[in-house]
Image (cartoon, rainbow, N blue to C red; front, side, top):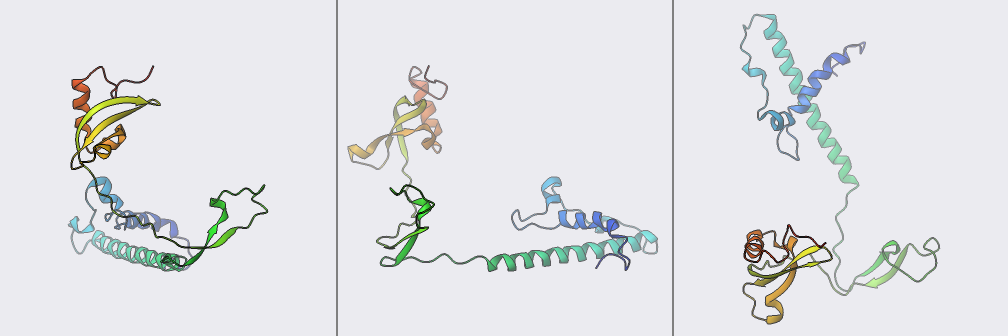
Length: 202
Protein backbone atom coordinates (compact mmCIF):
# COMPACT_ATOMS: atom_id res chain seq x y z
CA UNK A 1 0.00 0.00 0.00
CA UNK A 2 2.93 2.32 0.69
CA UNK A 3 5.42 1.17 -1.94
CA UNK A 4 5.60 2.18 -5.57
CA UNK A 5 4.12 0.11 -8.38
CA UNK A 6 7.50 -1.52 -9.02
CA UNK A 7 7.96 -2.12 -5.28
CA UNK A 8 11.48 -0.74 -5.35
CA UNK A 9 11.17 1.97 -2.69
CA UNK A 10 9.95 -0.06 0.32
CA UNK A 11 13.20 0.53 2.21
CA UNK A 12 12.56 4.29 2.25
CA UNK A 13 9.41 3.77 4.33
CA UNK A 14 11.01 1.64 7.05
CA UNK A 15 12.08 4.61 9.24
CA UNK A 16 8.54 6.03 9.13
CA UNK A 17 7.01 2.65 9.95
CA UNK A 18 9.42 2.28 12.87
CA UNK A 19 8.64 5.81 14.01
CA UNK A 20 4.89 5.16 13.88
CA UNK A 21 5.30 1.95 15.87
CA UNK A 22 7.39 3.58 18.61
CA UNK A 23 4.98 6.52 18.77
CA UNK A 24 1.86 4.31 19.14
CA UNK A 25 0.32 3.56 22.53
CA UNK A 26 0.80 -0.05 23.63
CA UNK A 27 -2.04 -1.84 25.37
CA UNK A 28 0.18 -3.26 28.13
CA UNK A 29 1.89 -0.03 29.21
CA UNK A 30 -0.83 2.44 28.11
CA UNK A 31 1.90 4.60 26.62
CA UNK A 32 4.21 4.61 23.63
CA UNK A 33 7.80 3.28 23.80
CA UNK A 34 8.97 6.78 22.83
CA UNK A 35 7.13 8.27 25.83
CA UNK A 36 8.56 5.59 28.11
CA UNK A 37 12.12 6.53 27.14
CA UNK A 38 11.89 10.31 26.66
CA UNK A 39 8.85 11.25 28.75
CA UNK A 40 7.01 12.79 25.79
CA UNK A 41 5.69 11.91 22.35
CA UNK A 42 7.19 13.52 19.24
CA UNK A 43 4.94 15.61 17.03
CA UNK A 44 5.22 17.16 13.62
CA UNK A 45 2.99 20.00 14.84
CA UNK A 46 5.94 21.61 16.63
CA UNK A 47 7.65 22.34 13.30
CA UNK A 48 6.76 25.85 12.09
CA UNK A 49 7.68 26.47 8.47
CA UNK A 50 6.28 28.42 5.56
CA UNK A 51 3.21 26.89 3.94
CA UNK A 52 4.62 27.43 0.46
CA UNK A 53 7.95 25.75 1.08
CA UNK A 54 8.76 22.20 -0.08
CA UNK A 55 9.41 21.33 3.55
CA UNK A 56 5.76 22.06 4.38
CA UNK A 57 4.60 19.66 1.68
CA UNK A 58 7.00 17.01 2.94
CA UNK A 59 5.87 17.56 6.53
CA UNK A 60 2.21 17.21 5.51
CA UNK A 61 2.99 14.03 3.60
CA UNK A 62 4.93 12.59 6.51
CA UNK A 63 2.06 13.31 8.91
CA UNK A 64 -0.35 11.60 6.53
CA UNK A 65 1.88 8.57 6.15
CA UNK A 66 2.43 8.38 9.91
CA UNK A 67 -1.34 8.44 10.48
CA UNK A 68 -1.80 5.68 7.88
CA UNK A 69 0.86 3.56 9.55
CA UNK A 70 -0.82 4.10 12.92
CA UNK A 71 -4.23 3.04 11.59
CA UNK A 72 -2.74 -0.03 9.92
CA UNK A 73 -0.94 -0.96 13.13
CA UNK A 74 -4.15 -0.66 15.15
CA UNK A 75 -5.99 -2.71 12.53
CA UNK A 76 -3.31 -5.42 12.69
CA UNK A 77 -3.62 -5.54 16.49
CA UNK A 78 -7.40 -5.96 16.21
CA UNK A 79 -7.00 -8.77 13.67
CA UNK A 80 -4.41 -10.48 15.84
CA UNK A 81 -6.75 -10.32 18.84
CA UNK A 82 -9.67 -11.61 16.77
CA UNK A 83 -7.79 -14.71 15.58
CA UNK A 84 -6.15 -15.28 18.96
CA UNK A 85 -9.53 -15.23 20.71
CA UNK A 86 -10.67 -18.10 18.49
CA UNK A 87 -8.29 -20.40 20.33
CA UNK A 88 -9.35 -19.18 23.74
CA UNK A 89 -12.27 -20.62 25.65
CA UNK A 90 -14.04 -19.78 28.89
CA UNK A 91 -12.89 -22.19 31.64
CA UNK A 92 -15.59 -24.62 32.74
CA UNK A 93 -17.57 -23.79 35.87
CA UNK A 94 -17.25 -27.02 37.83
CA UNK A 95 -19.83 -27.67 40.55
CA UNK A 96 -20.17 -30.40 43.21
CA UNK A 97 -21.66 -33.51 41.62
CA UNK A 98 -20.03 -32.99 38.22
CA UNK A 99 -18.01 -35.86 36.72
CA UNK A 100 -14.50 -34.95 35.57
CA UNK A 101 -11.48 -36.62 33.99
CA UNK A 102 -7.97 -35.90 35.29
CA UNK A 103 -4.72 -35.84 33.30
CA UNK A 104 -2.66 -38.83 34.41
CA UNK A 105 0.62 -36.95 33.96
CA UNK A 106 -0.12 -35.06 37.19
CA UNK A 107 -1.03 -38.17 39.20
CA UNK A 108 1.42 -40.73 40.58
CA UNK A 109 0.39 -44.37 40.21
CA UNK A 110 1.97 -47.73 41.05
CA UNK A 111 2.11 -48.78 37.39
CA UNK A 112 5.62 -49.52 36.02
CA UNK A 113 5.62 -47.11 33.09
CA UNK A 114 3.57 -44.09 32.10
CA UNK A 115 3.89 -44.81 28.39
CA UNK A 116 1.46 -47.72 28.67
CA UNK A 117 -0.87 -45.98 31.13
CA UNK A 118 -4.08 -44.16 30.31
CA UNK A 119 -3.68 -40.47 29.51
CA UNK A 120 -6.85 -39.61 31.44
CA UNK A 121 -8.18 -41.07 34.68
CA UNK A 122 -11.76 -41.05 35.86
CA UNK A 123 -14.44 -40.03 35.79
CA UNK A 124 -14.29 -38.66 39.33
CA UNK A 125 -17.09 -36.84 41.09
CA UNK A 126 -16.43 -33.26 42.18
CA UNK A 127 -16.97 -33.17 45.94
CA UNK A 128 -15.93 -29.61 46.78
CA UNK A 129 -14.89 -26.44 44.96
CA UNK A 130 -11.72 -24.82 46.29
CA UNK A 131 -11.47 -21.21 45.16
CA UNK A 132 -8.89 -18.49 45.58
CA UNK A 133 -10.77 -16.89 48.45
CA UNK A 134 -9.40 -13.70 49.88
CA UNK A 135 -7.51 -14.40 53.09
CA UNK A 136 -7.48 -12.07 56.05
CA UNK A 137 -4.08 -10.60 56.80
CA UNK A 138 -3.22 -10.47 60.48
CA UNK A 139 -1.10 -7.70 61.96
CA UNK A 140 2.08 -8.52 63.86
CA UNK A 141 2.07 -7.19 67.43
CA UNK A 142 5.72 -7.86 68.23
CA UNK A 143 8.65 -10.18 67.61
CA UNK A 144 9.48 -12.35 70.62
CA UNK A 145 12.39 -14.49 69.49
CA UNK A 146 14.48 -15.55 66.50
CA UNK A 147 16.26 -18.68 65.33
CA UNK A 148 18.04 -20.21 62.36
CA UNK A 149 16.36 -23.20 60.76
CA UNK A 150 18.22 -24.92 57.94
CA UNK A 151 20.20 -21.77 57.35
CA UNK A 152 17.12 -19.53 57.15
CA UNK A 153 16.05 -16.86 59.63
CA UNK A 154 12.76 -17.39 61.51
CA UNK A 155 10.96 -15.10 63.96
CA UNK A 156 8.59 -15.97 66.78
CA UNK A 157 5.82 -13.41 66.27
CA UNK A 158 2.82 -12.42 68.34
CA UNK A 159 -0.31 -11.62 66.33
CA UNK A 160 -2.82 -8.91 67.14
CA UNK A 161 -6.46 -9.88 67.58
CA UNK A 162 -5.89 -13.57 68.31
CA UNK A 163 -6.76 -14.93 71.73
CA UNK A 164 -5.96 -18.65 71.45
CA UNK A 165 -2.49 -19.39 72.80
CA UNK A 166 -1.88 -21.88 69.99
CA UNK A 167 -2.57 -19.21 67.37
CA UNK A 168 -1.37 -16.01 69.06
CA UNK A 169 2.33 -16.83 68.64
CA UNK A 170 3.83 -18.70 65.69
CA UNK A 171 7.25 -19.20 64.15
CA UNK A 172 7.39 -17.48 60.75
CA UNK A 173 10.18 -17.18 58.18
CA UNK A 174 11.59 -13.67 57.98
CA UNK A 175 10.26 -13.43 54.41
CA UNK A 176 6.70 -13.45 55.83
CA UNK A 177 7.34 -10.19 57.67
CA UNK A 178 7.68 -8.07 54.52
CA UNK A 179 4.84 -5.82 55.72
CA UNK A 180 6.45 -5.39 59.16
CA UNK A 181 10.22 -5.27 58.52
CA UNK A 182 10.85 -2.74 61.29
CA UNK A 183 9.66 -5.16 63.98
CA UNK A 184 12.39 -7.62 63.05
CA UNK A 185 14.99 -4.85 63.02
CA UNK A 186 13.82 -3.58 66.41
CA UNK A 187 14.09 -7.07 67.91
CA UNK A 188 17.62 -7.56 66.57
CA UNK A 189 18.63 -4.14 67.88
CA UNK A 190 17.44 -5.06 71.38
CA UNK A 191 18.93 -8.56 71.22
CA UNK A 192 22.06 -8.35 69.04
CA UNK A 193 23.20 -11.82 70.14
CA UNK A 194 20.07 -13.41 68.65
CA UNK A 195 20.09 -14.58 65.01
CA UNK A 196 19.34 -11.76 62.59
CA UNK A 197 19.56 -10.91 58.89
CA UNK A 198 23.35 -10.48 59.04
CA UNK A 199 24.01 -13.62 61.08
CA UNK A 200 24.28 -16.97 59.37
CA UNK A 201 25.02 -20.45 60.65
CA UNK A 202 28.72 -21.29 60.69
